Image 1: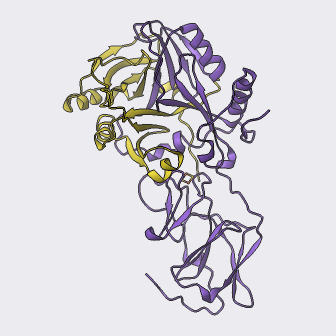
Image 2: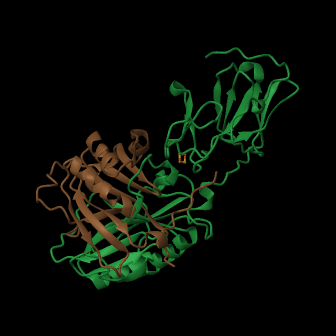
Image 3: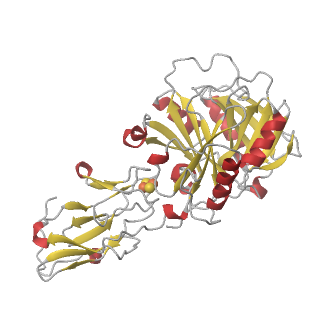
Length: 155
Length: 293
Ligand code: FES
């Protein structure tokens, strides 16, 4: 037993625009986007920002106002040189759908890469969003065994 | 010495996901099913593996189990989400920015983590402590390479009703209120609402996670600033997708004194699953209120 139940949220940075929300809605196929209002975020000194909800996990997109180009190195698969990479799982049957969505939207991706059979992952594809954040979508060999979602409140 | 109030002891599993989310809030037709794993670049695999296992408390699954080209280590949470640590030779320490990840624990695991971190001489801090709903706990952490994390839990006190000690509150003559009026009572922590059907005393604790709702007159609704749940004047959750309200606002019983004053008994609370007109207390005169909208 681990001491940790789940990874519950991530904060990433991205351009402050509706475009990045649409990217997640369209590429991940239905991630529910909402906006943290100024009244909520403003009272702790932040800016309003979009959030994506996927099951029991939320990713929060903070507006990146650094003005620095984030996507100028041509890399698609990465996230290990001081950054991180976020990976979502999909059923094996629908894995192809994500590749199709990326192709339709002209988003370059790498893969599918096949993982060793002794490990928990099946295949992965890799891509980046408009903010240069690294993403991966995979199907998992252990999907039927390990999945134990965070229980939800009944009232 | 404790530098943070701790959750009450329990092994109860979390009732919510990140930021108080619930899986059923997810959009329709979702293709991706869940968050699977986080890949983190590290400079020294042995050091980081020990940190994520012994400090954070993840289970170690093994080394080099995926197609990552560099040496790597796979660790796992109880719900099967993973952290994959990948050794990198060209690692740049991440700049200070908004990027961070959060690990969710049970209240008891959080208490153990608190002790563990204190035992290591760490100063426990939470940048947003003053802005969390009751029962939300969080500790800021940084891994050996400067990646920012939080460990968090939801204590049982975040969804349990918190009684006030105000007892019975006299809200003045019933005739002073006209239909549509909403009046806050700080003593007892409730709103008195005059509906066409009668009076409701709505407890201000949000039914998502014990945030405190405020009445927004311009929008004719109650609003919880923590995760923006809204409720109509009958205390019913507004019917939009993603409203985090866990049900209607709770009621306090309303009676009337011989002098016709509205009395609200804050020592009692009525849980309900929906609004029904019979919940509104009608003043003895039975005068229908004058409608304003
Ligand atoms: S506490 Fe979450 S919406 Fe009120």
